[in-house]
Length: 280
Image (cartoon, rainbow, N blue to C red; front, side, top):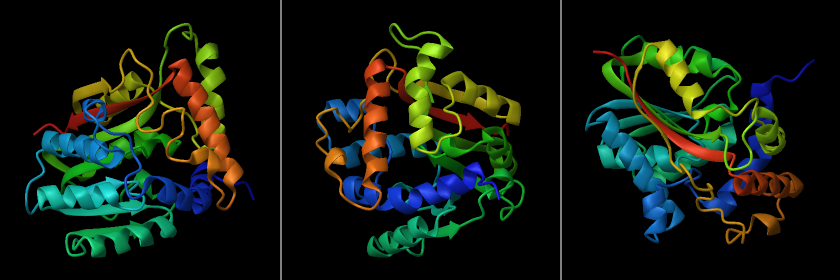
């Protein structure tokens, strides 16, 4: 039986999840560049970016939100804390969800958060939520793993209340420096896709266009590292220890670091953010 892309992603996190957790703690996504430049820790920079997204969405106390691809729960729990809202995180990997539940309980947010392990293709429908029922849908570096990104944006549009927001942060491919053509970009991006179980890395405008096609008014579509190389909290000196990681299937982790470093150095890898509102 052929393995689906979604199944490959789930299996990838069976071994990558423990590595990411060991090396990055609870917060796995890039942070706010200004916060990083000001000397904040990777965790605090990630929180600063999450706060920016929550503020843009206008999530308030008592509201209800969905965080797609919630991983080990750090950002999901943080959003619930700062907004005093109810936030449900979803993932197709139970190991990730179990770690997230444990973290939420440690933070005293077990009553404000829930973490569900869903089917590999359930992102296409978000069937558990009725129409116009959520105050925010968020994603942090997770939609990149989806083969049908547009289906997720359509489902997010359906479940959001009129006037509510989809907010997201994700990996993108882009032209940069001497690497301008699709072939020149693919030389660096394709290895990233292959090692890290990404069917196809999107682009800034590609995500925006999919959101518009789903019905959203896109208020923010921003390359967070416009004009500069995107290293974030993972500089080539490897202060986090990716190259020395010795856990299960460590060669995959080492390969991921290697191909990402090459794409970052070429400038063709970056991270972007979007704020898209469902018309009132």
